[in-house]
Length: 427
Image (cartoon, rainbow, N blue to C red; front, side, top):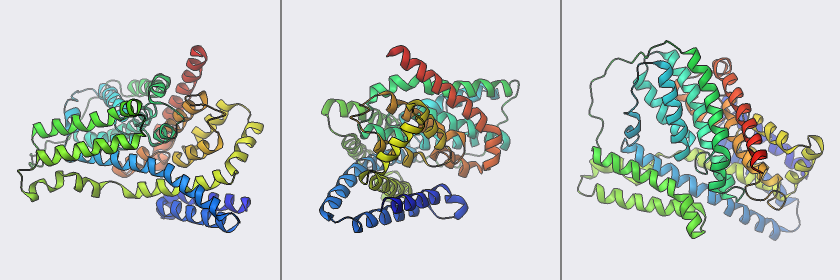
């Protein structure tokens, strides 16, 4: 049975990694893989009550992550519908390309830490279309935005889905991960920025032709500011809510979603339905990426089946005996996340190593959050941010390999070394 389960998972995993060449959505592959894995496990086991109990247990753990992601994505959509992100983007003004790169890099880094790397990438690339006329400049900036977004998302519990998974699973705590990974993540960004600023030295920003204002902003300045700061405040306060109430993070963000919904209803209560429909939270719920949500459900349940059948425990033992050093194992996992999706990699790692063996906020989990979060920048297909940039700016895979992958690789290993040295000095 174990061999059959591994073969099924590898086939499903390959289908996820090769989503674009085979033209099959990775959500379909993940759901199909999860269904077949649990079916084979159930048919091969006499104790069906145990399988049912394990499935319910896995479903509860998966639901925590899914509810959190759905609420966070909805909040971001509401802010975007009010054009709230222009509170930040409208303040970026410079004539030097190198200076603009530094500004965009740091805005992306910190915005990603507060929101998430995918949303931040979409917002910043959309901004570049308003600031840069040359397609080559926009492509280069898009590549650096991917690096900055993944670096910024790695050091906070809400900035990257893999860090969120570790946080909700109890492997890390919010303050510890922020203190532990901030410097490493910052170095991951600064080293590539230093190289790029030298390459862009002396070049000027070429802005696109000014287009006439079409009046698309249908929300007032007051509405934009209110929804922007309220949305960000809710996202930032979730870790505080968890610390104070000891309730899981999804409860805090659902509570915040309710507050945002109420404020939105009161804010637009005197408008006609036609005028306020696109600004409502109900409309935002229809715009969130449900395909990604379904993918998370499928892949987490698929990995859970391997955990309950002890396949992951056996893999952890093999890695310990073959590689030996935990820092090398995590480094390999981070590099692997450039090729395949980091969500199943982290989910598998959570099943491979127990909290009894590696307690909360231990070296393994913090390094895992960094490696999986930033390793995906090495290839354009290695992260959600990269895939979004690929679609928005039509970035070719091999263009990214030639222009951006080397920068991402240097940043990845620089941050890795900084974290290991920092950990040894502080512990």
